[in-house]
Image (cartoon, rainbow, N blue to C red; front, side):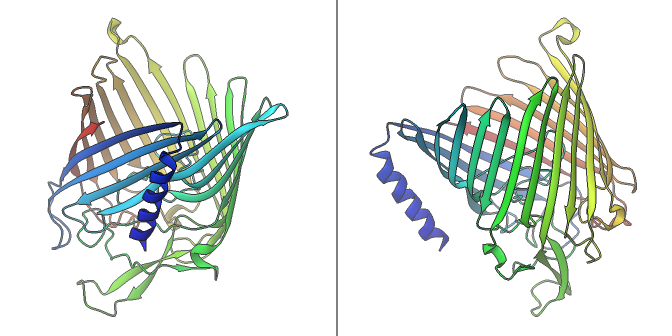
Amino acid sequence: MRHSVLIALLGFISATSAVAQTFDVNSEISLQGRWYPQSPLFSEQSSLAMGAVAKTTLHLELASKTSFTFTPLYRYDSADSQRTHGDVREAYFLMYGDWKTSSWELRLGQASVYWGVTELYNLVDIVNQTDLVEHPRNRPKLGQPMVHLTLSGDWGIAESFLLPYHRQRTFPGPEGRLRSRFPINENASYEHPDEENHVDVAFRYSNSVGPFDFGLSMFVGTNREPAFVASEQTEATTPEYFTLQPYYEQIEQIGLDVQLTTIGLLYKLEAIQRNGMLNLFGAEESYHAVILGTEHTIYNLFNSSASLTVLAEWLYDARGSRATNVWTNDLFLSGFLSLNDVAGTEFVAGLLADLDYDYRALNLEFKRRLSDSWTMRFESIVNLTSDPDDLTYDGRKDSFLGIDFTFGF
């Protein structure tokens, strides 16, 4: 089924490219590797993983105010079969025009939307599903089928979303080093009888008033973050007795994101109120969560062209130990050094500390262009301490060192 859809999309692109006014293609191929210095928790896991990622964006200008964008992605991973996967990040038509004193845009198809202002984690970002096998820090997103209408003017920006299909979250497989203690069952269940075909809706209003940039959002529909139900294994395919079955509830979420820009500092806030979600122990619980952050940039560091950005963020979830994710009461400190040289050299260091449990993690990153086409990136996530009382961390010690070389063309 997936192959037939892809073939149909490629056939459509070939047909429309013949009548397109402009046709742009941007592609990149990344060769990647990860090394895990600690012994694995499970016998089927390995200490070394190699892989490659191919991504292409095709942009077709079909008419003066109509375009089509197509962005497929494919990843191969030598160690985890679940991490080997493909996705269509984007496959949408964009139409735009003017309406009285305002402007409008309409996106039809599969697209990606990002909400939020903080760096480590975005509470308000709920339209797209997380592609968790891509990276453990919850950044990459799966493409989401949508009808996305945007109206903008001097009064602000109003966005409406109709989301006709729910995409399930991806998880590492039994061989994956970043997997949970118990395997994830691929047969997810849903609260609503329409299951993945339930039609979700979302709205967002954003504006800038003086030094404030803010957004108000609302989402009603199928949760992107699943709860888990333990079920006994029917086949002895793994040594564990239980698997975890994802369960997607119907929820309501109201979100707020604000950034205050001053001469010396940026102040950031994200907050949500969510109703209808199950907590870690399977009980429905309405709750609120918030992220507070501040950011400062020092330019011309030591009379050079370099700049240093330092930031601090605090993440709080009112559920505490009942929360289903790791962001319950955490402090994140980070520094970003950009040399602003021809090669675009960048260094990043971040420390994540759980204020309720004895968990500390260090994140290091180095990035530099090797030529006009090649980019090199080193990354390391080091779990300094892990608390067995924290159920959401699951006792893993999967520190790793990663490297990738990306060729863009």
